[in-house]
Length: 260
Image (tube, rainbow, N blue to C red; front, top):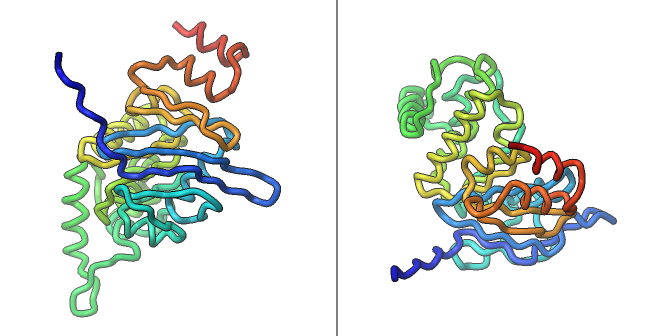
């Protein structure tokens, strides 16, 4: 009998994380474990607390209660700077790109390379090209304004920018929400390449087909609480949908069961 290798220790662990906004309890005692070389899908209905949890991990909105551990050590993440210093990068749904700047300008925005006090455009373009080639990303020209790129290309630019700081964990907030079919495939391929590079990826999505395509594990949030952890390979879409909706017999579940 071949012994089963124990799961690697989590790179990022959250325990008992809670967040309140006035009378609204956005998160209540949420737990999460994220491992290197793994894609964890975070799913849930609107208002489940997904965006709030991402902002807490990213340092944009600190938790009221709970513990965050990084590589087994308890840490305080109260600012985006704290998350970046640990090695956590976040790509939000709005991408936060400067439409008038070219690809190189967006990639190095806020961390420009200078030589003798002058922007080193040649070195920045060289590094940008090397990074995109490493990720197998095809952009027609690095010097066209981002406004001229497709939605999928913009998404890859935003993800590439997050990788410049050599993070170990990447949070992706609805990366395929505004993309067409072909562009979605390209984005999912990029997520797989991030996992293959050994990064821990937290994928926030509503699309269960995307979850099935690239995720290893699924975490369901419902009304601000954990409502299930699932292995994608051994869990049906019906089980995940049931955990999201909190019901076993409704229109959504009947539609899932009827799907061939």
